[in-house]
Length: 280
Ligand code: NDP
Image 1 (cartoon, helix red, strand yellow):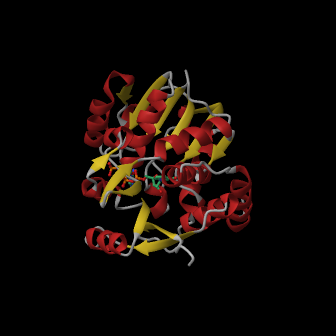
Image 2 (image 1 turned 60 degrees about the vertical axis):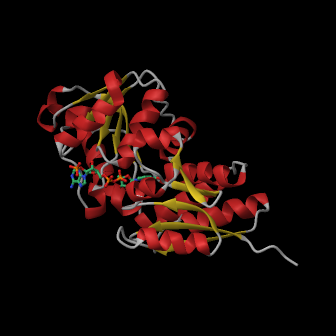
Protein backbone atom coordinates (compact mmCIF):
# COMPACT_ATOMS: atom_id res chain seq x y z
CA UNK A 1 0.00 0.00 0.00
CA UNK A 2 1.41 3.43 -0.93
CA UNK A 3 1.40 6.22 1.64
CA UNK A 4 -0.61 9.25 0.47
CA UNK A 5 1.50 12.41 0.00
CA UNK A 6 1.60 14.83 2.91
CA UNK A 7 -0.84 17.68 2.52
CA UNK A 8 0.38 21.28 2.45
CA UNK A 9 -1.19 24.50 1.26
CA UNK A 10 -0.80 28.24 0.99
CA UNK A 11 -3.79 30.33 2.09
CA UNK A 12 -4.41 33.92 1.03
CA UNK A 13 -6.47 36.29 -1.09
CA UNK A 14 -5.71 36.68 -3.92
CA UNK A 15 -3.81 33.40 -4.22
CA UNK A 16 -4.26 32.13 -7.78
CA UNK A 17 -0.88 33.49 -8.93
CA UNK A 18 1.08 32.31 -5.88
CA UNK A 19 4.41 30.70 -6.75
CA UNK A 20 4.41 28.68 -3.51
CA UNK A 21 2.90 25.43 -4.92
CA UNK A 22 5.50 25.42 -7.67
CA UNK A 23 8.36 26.25 -5.29
CA UNK A 24 7.45 23.51 -2.82
CA UNK A 25 6.90 20.96 -5.58
CA UNK A 26 10.40 21.76 -6.88
CA UNK A 27 11.92 21.44 -3.40
CA UNK A 28 10.14 18.10 -2.89
CA UNK A 29 11.35 16.80 -6.26
CA UNK A 30 14.90 17.87 -5.45
CA UNK A 31 14.88 15.95 -2.16
CA UNK A 32 12.76 12.97 -3.18
CA UNK A 33 9.86 13.99 -0.92
CA UNK A 34 6.40 13.43 -2.37
CA UNK A 35 4.03 16.14 -1.29
CA UNK A 36 0.68 17.59 -2.23
CA UNK A 37 0.83 21.42 -2.00
CA UNK A 38 -2.17 23.49 -3.02
CA UNK A 39 -3.20 27.13 -3.13
CA UNK A 40 -6.41 27.76 -1.19
CA UNK A 41 -8.23 31.06 -1.74
CA UNK A 42 -9.45 32.40 1.58
CA UNK A 43 -10.33 35.81 2.94
CA UNK A 44 -10.21 36.77 6.61
CA UNK A 45 -13.80 35.79 7.35
CA UNK A 46 -13.45 32.35 5.75
CA UNK A 47 -9.99 31.50 7.03
CA UNK A 48 -10.75 29.76 10.38
CA UNK A 49 -13.23 27.39 8.71
CA UNK A 50 -10.98 26.82 5.70
CA UNK A 51 -8.04 25.96 7.95
CA UNK A 52 -10.18 23.61 10.04
CA UNK A 53 -11.38 21.84 6.90
CA UNK A 54 -7.78 21.52 5.70
CA UNK A 55 -6.70 20.04 9.05
CA UNK A 56 -9.62 17.60 9.09
CA UNK A 57 -8.58 16.43 5.61
CA UNK A 58 -5.09 15.62 6.85
CA UNK A 59 -3.32 18.95 6.28
CA UNK A 60 0.03 18.93 8.06
CA UNK A 61 1.53 22.28 7.12
CA UNK A 62 0.58 25.59 5.54
CA UNK A 63 1.93 28.93 4.48
CA UNK A 64 -0.19 32.00 5.01
CA UNK A 65 0.04 35.22 3.05
CA UNK A 66 -1.86 38.51 2.68
CA UNK A 67 -4.22 39.27 4.38
CA UNK A 68 -4.14 36.37 6.86
CA UNK A 69 -0.88 36.54 8.83
CA UNK A 70 -2.36 38.12 11.96
CA UNK A 71 -5.37 35.78 11.76
CA UNK A 72 -3.06 32.78 11.55
CA UNK A 73 -1.22 34.04 14.61
CA UNK A 74 -4.48 34.15 16.55
CA UNK A 75 -5.43 30.60 15.53
CA UNK A 76 -2.18 29.05 16.80
CA UNK A 77 -1.98 27.27 20.10
CA UNK A 78 1.73 28.13 20.31
CA UNK A 79 4.00 30.40 18.29
CA UNK A 80 7.78 30.43 17.89
CA UNK A 81 9.58 33.37 19.57
CA UNK A 82 10.40 35.09 16.25
CA UNK A 83 6.72 34.90 15.23
CA UNK A 84 5.67 36.26 18.61
CA UNK A 85 8.06 39.19 18.16
CA UNK A 86 6.82 39.90 14.63
CA UNK A 87 3.19 39.47 15.68
CA UNK A 88 2.56 37.50 12.51
CA UNK A 89 2.68 33.90 11.34
CA UNK A 90 3.46 32.77 7.79
CA UNK A 91 4.08 29.08 8.55
CA UNK A 92 1.73 26.64 10.26
CA UNK A 93 2.85 23.24 11.51
CA UNK A 94 0.34 20.63 12.65
CA UNK A 95 1.44 19.11 15.96
CA UNK A 96 -0.70 17.05 18.33
CA UNK A 97 -3.91 18.14 16.60
CA UNK A 98 -3.02 21.83 17.04
CA UNK A 99 -1.32 24.51 14.99
CA UNK A 100 2.16 25.73 15.85
CA UNK A 101 2.98 29.06 14.20
CA UNK A 102 6.29 30.41 12.96
CA UNK A 103 7.50 33.31 10.84
CA UNK A 104 10.18 32.64 8.24
CA UNK A 105 9.95 36.03 6.48
CA UNK A 106 12.80 37.65 8.42
CA UNK A 107 15.14 34.69 7.96
CA UNK A 108 14.28 34.53 4.26
CA UNK A 109 14.98 38.22 3.80
CA UNK A 110 18.34 38.00 5.57
CA UNK A 111 19.47 34.99 3.60
CA UNK A 112 18.63 36.67 0.30
CA UNK A 113 20.35 39.91 1.33
CA UNK A 114 23.50 38.18 2.50
CA UNK A 115 23.91 35.38 0.01
CA UNK A 116 22.44 36.76 -3.19
CA UNK A 117 22.43 40.55 -3.05
CA UNK A 118 25.76 41.34 -1.36
CA UNK A 119 23.60 43.25 1.10
CA UNK A 120 24.59 42.07 4.58
CA UNK A 121 22.94 44.70 6.83
CA UNK A 122 25.51 44.36 9.62
CA UNK A 123 26.85 47.80 10.61
CA UNK A 124 24.91 49.43 7.73
CA UNK A 125 22.52 52.40 7.70
CA UNK A 126 19.14 50.92 6.86
CA UNK A 127 15.82 52.63 6.14
CA UNK A 128 12.73 50.44 6.42
CA UNK A 129 9.50 51.64 4.80
CA UNK A 130 6.32 50.23 6.32
CA UNK A 131 5.05 49.00 9.66
CA UNK A 132 2.95 45.95 8.79
CA UNK A 133 3.66 42.29 9.44
CA UNK A 134 6.49 41.97 6.91
CA UNK A 135 8.13 45.16 8.16
CA UNK A 136 8.05 43.89 11.74
CA UNK A 137 9.57 40.55 10.77
CA UNK A 138 12.22 42.37 8.73
CA UNK A 139 12.99 44.82 11.54
CA UNK A 140 13.63 42.14 14.15
CA UNK A 141 15.77 40.17 11.70
CA UNK A 142 17.80 43.28 10.82
CA UNK A 143 18.42 44.05 14.48
CA UNK A 144 19.51 40.47 15.15
CA UNK A 145 21.83 40.74 12.16
CA UNK A 146 23.63 43.69 13.77
CA UNK A 147 22.33 46.54 11.64
CA UNK A 148 24.31 49.73 12.27
CA UNK A 149 21.29 52.03 12.25
CA UNK A 150 17.64 51.21 11.64
CA UNK A 151 15.32 54.05 10.68
CA UNK A 152 11.67 53.27 10.09
CA UNK A 153 9.04 55.36 8.42
CA UNK A 154 5.41 54.73 7.58
CA UNK A 155 2.41 56.41 5.99
CA UNK A 156 0.55 56.18 9.32
CA UNK A 157 3.07 57.41 11.92
CA UNK A 158 1.17 55.78 14.82
CA UNK A 159 1.84 52.34 13.32
CA UNK A 160 5.56 53.12 13.04
CA UNK A 161 5.59 54.36 16.63
CA UNK A 162 4.01 51.19 17.98
CA UNK A 163 6.44 49.07 15.95
CA UNK A 164 9.37 51.12 17.26
CA UNK A 165 8.14 50.62 20.83
CA UNK A 166 8.30 46.85 20.28
CA UNK A 167 11.78 47.14 18.74
CA UNK A 168 13.23 49.12 21.65
CA UNK A 169 16.24 51.40 21.32
CA UNK A 170 17.61 49.65 18.25
CA UNK A 171 15.30 51.57 15.91
CA UNK A 172 14.11 55.13 15.47
CA UNK A 173 11.09 56.54 13.70
CA UNK A 174 11.58 59.14 10.99
CA UNK A 175 8.47 61.14 10.10
CA UNK A 176 7.77 61.12 6.35
CA UNK A 177 8.06 64.93 6.21
CA UNK A 178 11.60 64.88 7.69
CA UNK A 179 13.04 62.16 5.42
CA UNK A 180 14.70 64.80 3.25
CA UNK A 181 17.11 65.64 6.09
CA UNK A 182 17.85 62.01 7.03
CA UNK A 183 20.82 61.64 4.66
CA UNK A 184 21.46 58.63 2.45
CA UNK A 185 21.24 54.95 3.41
CA UNK A 186 23.19 51.81 2.49
CA UNK A 187 19.97 49.85 2.23
CA UNK A 188 16.41 51.08 1.64
CA UNK A 189 13.82 48.34 2.09
CA UNK A 190 10.27 48.81 0.88
CA UNK A 191 8.04 46.68 3.11
CA UNK A 192 4.84 48.52 2.21
CA UNK A 193 2.11 46.99 0.09
CA UNK A 194 1.75 50.22 -1.94
CA UNK A 195 3.10 48.54 -5.08
CA UNK A 196 0.14 46.17 -5.25
CA UNK A 197 -1.94 49.26 -6.10
CA UNK A 198 0.71 50.50 -8.54
CA UNK A 199 2.05 53.13 -6.13
CA UNK A 200 5.31 53.79 -4.33
CA UNK A 201 5.85 55.70 -1.09
CA UNK A 202 6.85 59.30 -1.84
CA UNK A 203 10.59 59.53 -1.09
CA UNK A 204 13.22 62.26 -1.47
CA UNK A 205 16.08 61.42 -3.85
CA UNK A 206 18.59 62.23 -1.09
CA UNK A 207 17.89 58.85 0.56
CA UNK A 208 19.68 57.09 -2.28
CA UNK A 209 23.41 57.29 -2.96
CA UNK A 210 25.40 55.52 -5.68
CA UNK A 211 26.01 52.39 -3.56
CA UNK A 212 22.52 52.17 -2.06
CA UNK A 213 20.77 48.84 -2.41
CA UNK A 214 17.05 49.48 -2.97
CA UNK A 215 15.09 46.35 -2.10
CA UNK A 216 11.35 45.82 -2.49
CA UNK A 217 9.95 42.90 -0.49
CA UNK A 218 7.27 42.38 -3.13
CA UNK A 219 8.15 41.06 -6.56
CA UNK A 220 6.93 41.34 -10.13
CA UNK A 221 4.67 44.25 -11.05
CA UNK A 222 4.16 45.21 -7.40
CA UNK A 223 7.88 45.95 -7.05
CA UNK A 224 8.14 48.08 -10.16
CA UNK A 225 6.99 51.51 -8.82
CA UNK A 226 9.44 51.59 -5.89
CA UNK A 227 12.38 50.14 -7.80
CA UNK A 228 11.84 52.54 -10.69
CA UNK A 229 11.63 55.51 -8.30
CA UNK A 230 14.81 54.38 -6.49
CA UNK A 231 16.74 54.05 -9.75
CA UNK A 232 15.54 57.44 -10.91
CA UNK A 233 16.75 58.84 -7.59
CA UNK A 234 20.22 57.38 -8.12
CA UNK A 235 20.26 53.91 -6.58
CA UNK A 236 22.51 51.74 -8.73
CA UNK A 237 21.27 48.47 -7.27
CA UNK A 238 17.52 47.76 -7.19
CA UNK A 239 16.12 44.28 -6.56
CA UNK A 240 12.74 42.78 -5.81
CA UNK A 241 11.73 40.22 -3.17
CA UNK A 242 11.73 37.11 -5.38
CA UNK A 243 14.83 35.84 -3.58
CA UNK A 244 13.18 36.44 -0.21
CA UNK A 245 10.12 34.52 -1.40
CA UNK A 246 12.24 31.52 -2.35
CA UNK A 247 14.28 31.67 0.86
CA UNK A 248 11.31 32.01 3.21
CA UNK A 249 9.76 29.03 1.43
CA UNK A 250 12.96 27.04 1.97
CA UNK A 251 12.85 27.94 5.68
CA UNK A 252 9.23 26.75 5.90
CA UNK A 253 10.11 23.57 4.01
CA UNK A 254 12.88 22.89 6.54
CA UNK A 255 10.42 23.30 9.41
CA UNK A 256 8.08 20.74 7.86
CA UNK A 257 10.62 18.24 6.53
CA UNK A 258 13.74 18.72 8.68
CA UNK A 259 15.89 19.35 5.63
CA UNK A 260 16.65 22.65 3.87
CA UNK A 261 16.50 22.50 0.08
CA UNK A 262 19.07 24.17 -2.17
CA UNK A 263 17.60 27.32 -3.70
CA UNK A 264 20.06 28.60 -6.32
CA UNK A 265 18.81 26.71 -9.37
CA UNK A 266 15.12 27.33 -8.68
CA UNK A 267 15.77 31.02 -8.02
CA UNK A 268 17.67 31.32 -11.30
CA UNK A 269 14.77 29.73 -13.22
CA UNK A 270 12.11 31.91 -11.58
CA UNK A 271 14.29 35.02 -11.98
CA UNK A 272 14.69 34.47 -15.70
CA UNK A 273 10.98 33.83 -16.19
CA UNK A 274 9.98 36.89 -14.18
CA UNK A 275 12.50 39.15 -15.91
CA UNK A 276 11.22 38.05 -19.31
CA UNK A 277 7.60 38.60 -18.24
CA UNK A 278 8.44 42.02 -16.79
CA UNK A 279 10.67 43.10 -19.74
CA UNK A 280 13.36 44.14 -17.22
P1 NDP B 1 0.54 44.75 5.72
O1 NDP B 1 -0.81 44.92 5.17
O2 NDP B 1 0.72 44.11 7.07
O3 NDP B 1 1.28 46.20 5.81
C1 NDP B 1 1.17 47.06 4.74
C2 NDP B 1 2.11 48.27 4.95
O4 NDP B 1 2.12 49.04 3.74
C3 NDP B 1 1.68 49.22 6.05
O5 NDP B 1 2.82 49.78 6.66
C4 NDP B 1 0.91 50.29 5.28
O6 NDP B 1 0.91 51.56 5.91
C5 NDP B 1 1.74 50.39 4.03
N1 NDP B 1 1.02 50.91 2.87
C6 NDP B 1 -0.04 50.36 2.24
N2 NDP B 1 -0.41 51.11 1.19
C7 NDP B 1 0.44 52.18 1.15
C8 NDP B 1 0.57 53.31 0.30
N3 NDP B 1 -0.27 53.52 -0.74
N4 NDP B 1 1.55 54.19 0.56
C9 NDP B 1 2.40 54.00 1.59
N5 NDP B 1 2.32 52.95 2.44
C10 NDP B 1 1.35 52.05 2.22
O7 NDP B 1 1.37 43.95 4.61
P2 NDP B 1 2.62 42.99 4.82
O8 NDP B 1 3.52 43.63 5.80
O9 NDP B 1 2.19 41.60 5.07
O10 NDP B 1 3.29 43.00 3.34
C11 NDP B 1 4.00 44.14 2.89
C12 NDP B 1 4.66 43.82 1.56
O11 NDP B 1 5.66 42.82 1.73
C13 NDP B 1 3.70 43.27 0.49
O12 NDP B 1 4.02 43.88 -0.73
C14 NDP B 1 4.01 41.79 0.43
O13 NDP B 1 3.75 41.26 -0.84
C15 NDP B 1 5.50 41.80 0.75
N6 NDP B 1 5.98 40.53 1.29
C16 NDP B 1 6.89 39.78 0.57
C17 NDP B 1 7.37 38.59 1.06
C18 NDP B 1 8.35 37.80 0.26
O14 NDP B 1 8.61 36.64 0.61
N7 NDP B 1 8.96 38.34 -0.78
C19 NDP B 1 6.93 38.06 2.36
C20 NDP B 1 6.01 38.94 3.05
C21 NDP B 1 5.55 40.10 2.52
P3 NDP B 1 -0.20 51.99 7.00
O15 NDP B 1 0.33 51.52 8.33
O16 NDP B 1 -0.25 53.45 6.86
O17 NDP B 1 -1.50 51.31 6.62
